[in-house]
Structures are given as structure tokens and as C-alpha cells.
Length: 116
Image (cartoon, rainbow, N blue to C red; front, top):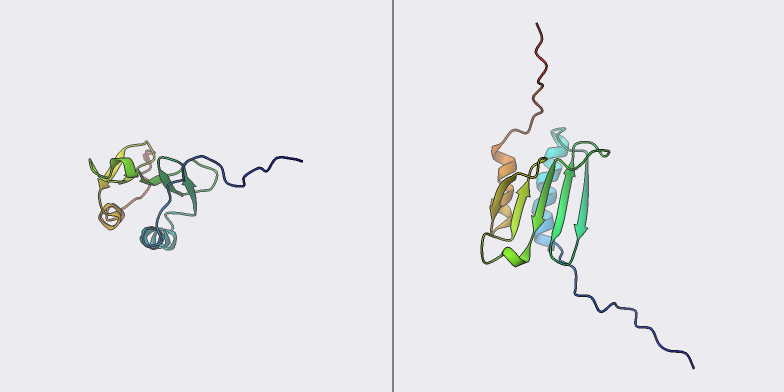
């Protein structure tokens, strides 16, 4: 007789955003879409962290990334918002506090071309 193969893998569970966290993130994302600052998003779940990436255009690298890293919960906070150049914009223990970075800043593209 053949052997039985288990359906579940033996790897540890993936890290994900909770429903309340996703609700807060999608509220911010919806406001950004209405303002014309965002067009697409992607969600990633990994063993050590979860990511919500926001794109200005779908063919580019993400403009902002919201990450949840449970291992950092007791040190600097589990939530981090990164900018397009991987700079930390805000870090903290509460998702709503971290997402306030999107309310206080105006994310506009500044043109370096000077018109004469």
C-alpha cells in the first residue's frame, strides 16, 4: 500500500495582518487613492513579517511599505512605515499611531526641472 502525504506543511505559520489592522491600513490606502497618490497595492505574508506595499503605478517598486514584525514588538514596536528609498518614516507599537505619518505629510512629487 502507498504512503499518506499530509496536506499541511511542517513549516511555522505565516505572519499576517489582523482584520482590525487591515481595516486601518485600507482606510489610509483608500484616502490615498482618492487623492491620486496611490493606484495599486500588494500584500505579502512571510514567516517573520507581513507587508502591505503601496504603489503610485503598478509597474514600479512600492512607494511606501507598511510592515508588521512581531519579533520587534517588545523593543521598538511591531509596525514600521518605510519610504521609497527604504527610509523609516514611522515606527511604533500601535498601527493607528504609525499610520498617522500619512496624515501629517503631503506626499507630492517634487520636480527637479527648473523652468526659465
